[in-house]
Length: 499
Ligand code: HEM
Image (cartoon, rainbow, N blue to C red; front, side, top):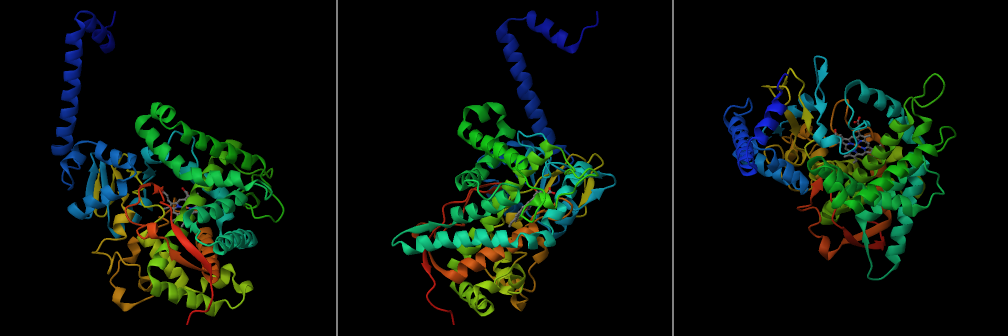
């Protein structure tokens, strides 16, 4: 009878007492780990790249930083100490070079593309949606929704965007009437963007608002739990994070209902009108794929735009001169409420510059977006790297690095408007919507939505930053998206035009 390795191991265990078995196996385990650490530091193909020895030897420093939602600060520290290319794990390099965006995110190597790293994207959900699929599967799903997020479609959504913006204005007006009450701006913005995404993905306007609001608040926690699952598996998910799991379950149910109740015809603001159909007129993907993608869109669309709105409001409240300039331009452009349209807002250049500057200082997707090189490897920023290497750009670090920006920590919209003082800024390194075939599908929508909501709010209200929110943007934790701290502000109806 052929003796297998497992069989031989069992036979050996049976022939020894339990303590010597335990001792031998744990010694082998420790030797294995020590050898792999020595190999990673001294013999690994990435050994020449700078970084802490601990990160070269083991994955846990980066994984731990992601677990506690501190990875962007961890990676930033490493870049400041070690330079533009840092080894953040045995097989992982982080880049802060302008050409890295194109090389990593916008490149197909022969036939094998650089793919999204499973550790970051799949969570417990191994079913592909647009954001974790790769290659043809990704292209197929993206094609179904592409027209629904084009400039043409977004124009059709304008009345719906105006309606939700006006609801936010009414809410803020209520707060403004009360003495000594502050508004929590992140929550108000997130609710608005969540309502917009809920309406776009199919729910009827009569649906109770509270459900959508709880969905909006669940978004961030869903991200955290999915990251932790990747590290600790189901045990953590069930034992420690049950309440969060219930939120994610609610989110999945909500998405499935959205798909079930979707309206494909008519003139309503809804993505299904524009979705690609097959020869029989059915949406060109399975019911399950639709559910998965609606869940993604609710996440991706609500959370990020709310971060942009919160951050730009915060930076403007901190920078009174920029606020004065913006409000003056808005006053001049929009004497009547009716003039405020998606098209007319594009012409207010200072508004777009403020949003760009906020995306630089507080990008809604601040963490490294991990990609994996295909078997044959690839050239990234002129370096030939082996297959299986994890590569990524560190956005939060790159957008504030003194070598790329004049006054890197200051909010300066003028740097986007041709001010000669900022001529040497490496603006091309700032890619808050990413680049290439897997860049942000909702970019056009996000720009219009952010311009409309910010301009409408600033035309109507004055804000004063709350005492406890003076440092709102400093040191926030993030797990792919930000764990936004409450952002409190006093709201008053605007009294006079700015000179
Ligand atoms: C300021 C707002 C936004 C920012 C900064 C932003 C940023 C990003 C980034 C950086 C990615 C790439 C993620 C990665 O590769 O890991 C992405 C992907 C995506 N975003 Fe956005 N996003 C914003 C708003 C939106 C909105 C409003 C939608 C609504 C539809 C949306 C839908 C998506 C989708 C579906 C993907 C995955 C695309 C694909 O894989 O093909 N995003 N976004």
